Image 1 (tube, rainbow over the protein chains, first blue to last red):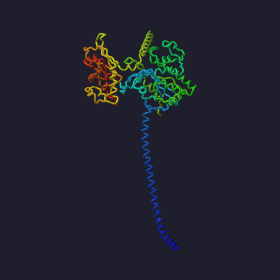
Image 2: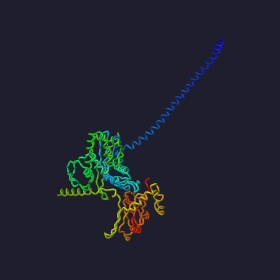
Image 3: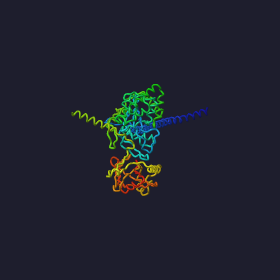
Image 4: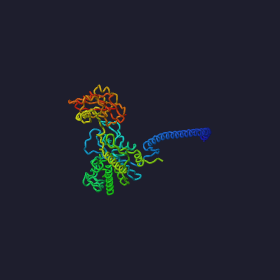
Length: 355
Length: 186
């Protein structure tokens, strides 16, 4: 017991001491706890504020840079109004090249002219396909390569000539896309398909013959091609209709463009009919285009998606740019597109006013 | 009557315009041209200068292409006395074409030829014009045209005044080619 008592006593003294100590310690602990808590709060607050500051600083800079870039890429200012590029409108340049399969291309300047240029603008929001046919004689800045294939600048001349320059079909197509962008105020076609002369007949053949109403008398080319005749074209007739120029009508490119349009419209109708009958026809169409095209940057899946969608859309009548025809100092026809007409087409088709 | 004349005139103008726009399509081979100066001569002795295609020029171009393909300075391709004048200019071969010259008579003296190349050179741009003279043995002699004899017009046309002595050599050579070097794009 003593032991206990002593112990107790001792313990009691100790307890008192301990109590005092505990009381003191508790106050100190409380004090330290308060200090600690305050430090933690200050640290947390500091860390939070630092984090926020860092976060805000970083994001603000990033967002500012991004928005600046978006502004540069997707807005244009015209006559005091800012326009935003509509991302739901994709573009595809279809070009027909004056070269036959297997024809030898020597050097970097003999790739042939792109005599047919059609820019499709596929508007998925409004479910419409716009078609802009560009005159091969439209004057614009054309990229030029030197005799060794090196870039040597640009020359103001007929857009069709852009396709002549380059060491590969890809490069020639890129030059044509660039020349078209120069004509359209910087608007670059998203994709491109290049088709050689032989492709006209083969496309006709693969579609089982395209039916057109012959718009004028071309009986000097083929006796069956009289004005108003409804003809399911054979391959040779298809090429005559699309390609001939100097030997028929007034011999102008503008007249040939009308014939090219009538053929394209007939092709679209034929494709639409085939898609209605067979949902898998888009895949077949890709195979057809793959066979007749000399170059395309479209992937199979991408192409099938675009075509499948586009064929359900309202395909609007072909549009052309207004402008002036002149004869250049070299004796060749030049088409000078009206700048306001170009701006109007680009802004109405591909852009919307920024509110 | 006035109305009728006006209608007829309009018709004639429309028809002539339609005919004009039926001009042939321009192709890439129509871009470049060389203009012979007007020199008085009998029709059969008329001075004729034109772009041409020759095996010698094609072979020479292939040699140049081979030489520069790994980034060698094109200046080094030419004989030393010419190379010395081209070094450090960061040059590229922009144009190279064979040229045919018929009926040149030394009495015609120096001749200015106006070239329209595919490359649209800029007015005042520093360019170098060299002439390759090919002989029947397969040798080539390069001649650098003096800078003072070269002028680039606002429309990019290049006027090169060839001295009579050089023209005579050009007339005697088996075939001739003209090379134009300019500064590489940055």
